[in-house]
Image (tube, rainbow, N blue to C red; front, side):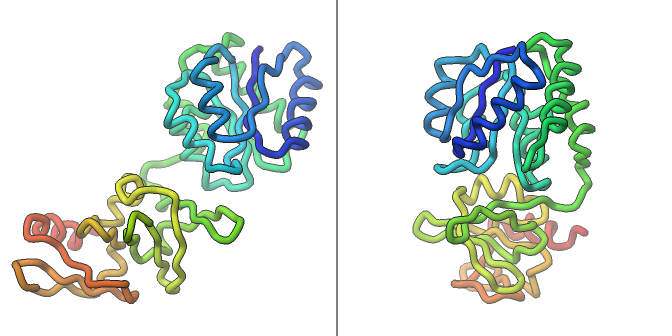
Amino acid sequence: MKIIIIEDEELTADDLADTIVERHPEARIEAVLHSVRESVAYLEAHRDADLIFSDIQLGDGLSFDIFSRVDLKIPVIFCTAFDEYALNAFKANGIDYILKPFTLDSVSAAIRKYLSFTSGKGGAAIDYGSLEKLFAVRRDAEPGSVLVYYQDQILPVPLGQIAFFYLRNGLVTLTTFENKTFSLNKSLDEVGKVAEPLFFRTNRQFLVNRKAVVKASSHLARKLSVHLSVQAPESVTVSREKITQFLDWLASS
């Protein structure tokens, strides 16, 4: 069983490698990678591992960036301190996740699940239906979270707490209902894929939460002017072409 570890903290990576080998002596650690950039370069050239253990927060970004840039069939076990990442891990071909600090038992249990999915044969097809049950993810569950950067931390902010997303000079920020603003390392298009249908893309600058909309009124040039419960940095308008779509969205429950 050939394993790759992606972890930016050297001591944690060494501890994880020792833990894996202690419980599974047949395992071979093929590589220990420390960043998104290093991982992408390595995985583009080496795709024959059986399993990847990956931290989520790396020094130069999130490990999800790796799996969106490199098309892999290798199952991934994510190491995280946040339960909110489960759905993203599932979408990135994850088969399990372990919460930090991990233990001998949690690491061993994750590998046993991997072996049960693949019958001990690396590279076998993953049953995504089973994975969805594994992560207890429901399509009709409460909205998820987005990751924001605050000082030297990366924090999850639940979508339900966000009034709007705003794009200016290439930078996307979010503002919460408590009027707190944070920056994101994603485009507004990427955010929209996660935030819809709770949010609507009113124009190039704004994604707004239905709960933040107080009213909409006629505007010059046949646009709608949208009034939010939280002060926006500029006027929020809906173009003529999107008015019907916006009103249908606003009326939906």
